[in-house]
Structures are given as C-alpha cells and as structure tokens.
Length: 170
Image 1: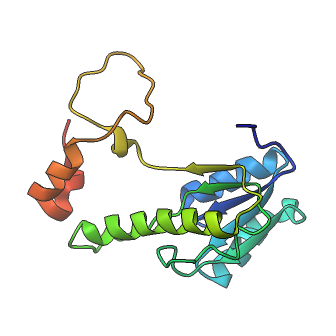
Image 2: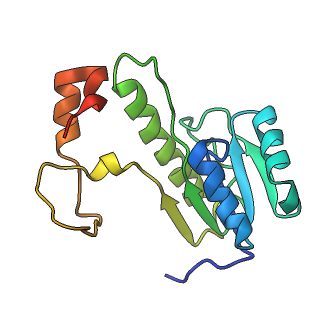
C-alpha cells in the first residue's frame, strides 16, 4: 500500500483530545492538510486558534456522537487518510461496557463511513492503548507487537473487577 504524503488531506477524529491534538499538530508540521473532528463548535474554534499558523491547512468537522452510525459520512468525503483517535471518555461509568460499546461503535462508524463515502481514502490508522496488547506472557527487551498480539487479561479482569479493572497491578 502506498504511503500517504504531504500535502494529502488527513481526517483526525477526536482532534480536540490530548492525543488527537498532538496527532493533528504533527501532521500539520509535516505539511499535511488536516480536518479534525470535534464534538462542538467551541472545540473546533479552539483548535483553529491553537493551529492559527496553519490556517490554510486546518479545518474541523463537528461530529457530536462518534458512536452514531454514519456520524463521519460527510467528514470522510475527499480525504486521503484517516487517523481514528476518537474514543469516549467517562470517569463515571459504572459498567465497563459503557466505555467499550461506544468505543467499538465509534470504530465501526468511521470504517462504515469510509466504506460508503471515503472513495479517496488510501489508508486508515486506528489508535489504541498500550493496554490492548498487555498480556501475562513474559517478554524480554523491547518486543515488536503486531496484529497477533492481544490482551487476554483485561476481559477476565473486567469480569472480576468491573469498573475497577483498570487498577491492574504489575
């Protein structure tokens, strides 16, 4: 698959989040055109101010609910690549599924939108957490992880600890 090179247009979902904003900034610094998705106009305007030196390279699209089917339909039109960084964050969710289901739905939503309307998309990058590959197998040094590496511990921890599953100790 060919690399996506500047000045290609990249859609960065969750651009107003910590990681999303840094992804957008890194792309802008390298000469890409970035469309960042945000949940509201004030968040988009904040990013326009933050990236004012890239005013001709940055714009935003409002996507109030990333988990909604078709949420990204308009945003994917005309983009060359997608960096899917958006994920729901809640510190009050009692049931871990209240985070897992929307995160999964958001990923399926962006993929569905690209399939239906992203005719110019060459590449999709889906970000995740290091926790998605943590497992109980010993690993020496700095191993390289790939699609064969999965976290088998977390589903068990979620079943046992519920919302406190993130308190896994090493």
